[in-house]
Length: 463
Ligand code: SF4
Image (cartoon, rainbow, N blue to C red):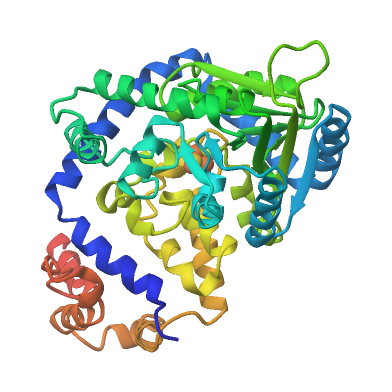
């Protein structure tokens, strides 16, 4: 088969950005700061390995018993006064949200940071219906003003320096070009305050669905999520079905794991547990709360015996920050909602496998992602399972097939391998991998002589 257009675009963008020194410097600076914070943050755990093992066990068990916990969650959430809408696809979720907004004649919504709304491309869908959408997380607000998508699942504006942001604000809001980060933040805060007060609806994502309590848990640093969820009359929360945790007590483990691995903080500044709309006698909170529970091919991933483990992901972003490929090509190159190692594992299953399987090949398989994952997802192994699935399904090019056939033929017989000398072997190898090696590097001479020749010479020397 031919390579997909997504694959072609990916290769082109990757080739360009990998040599962009300015981009590299910004990412290096931001990830460098993250690394220092994470090292400090992790000292909260007396035994981090135990914590990771426990979290991995709890989350994977919940994934394997999704049906049971989701039903338990639904019963409790509805008893708390919330309403649940199950959405099988992206289109169904958007239709339901648009319907809710239309019925209430909504003109503006405030949104807190949420990758699932990115997955739905919700802003675009609402703006088409002439509804104003304001991102209220600072990083999300910045990328929204820049007309971009989030660069990273935790830090959406990681690719922008403070100078880039000052310049962007100058262009958009005519603020002085010299604004420093504090001034930029204060300016944004003023702007958003008015939006919070006037918005008809607040939309948020969900970090965890707590089954035994029928509540959602949301963690953040700016308080914008809390305001988006409590100021407007209607709160719409959107969650993937995999976000389930069995018990409220599980947050004792998952909140610190998420914050230390996400930002290096021992705990994020605001942690909210919301168990439905405002009740009689309560002074704040929305009058209505609707939760959209989204499948959007998560059950497809669940059906894969090995890759389903990726549904344990708590979206901390740690695997992106250690990935040598991500650090070179950046988040936008993936052109998917979820980038980096976790994105490369799940996207082919959440979207079209043939179109996105190339992401699973864009990895050095160094295992750094697996090593840092707080819930112990063996990411590099799952990438290999995706690769195997691609091959089993026949998703390879004619050239790849021929190269594999020739290598298998040559390597499967010692006799055949010894028929040629080192020079010819190096030449053949160069010919086969030249394209993948790229035009900017010279392939090293692998071995000046054949193994048999070297063995013979060494044995003679030893005599
Ligand atoms: S796969 Fe693991 S490290 Fe990567 S985002 Fe998910 S939880 Fe974090």
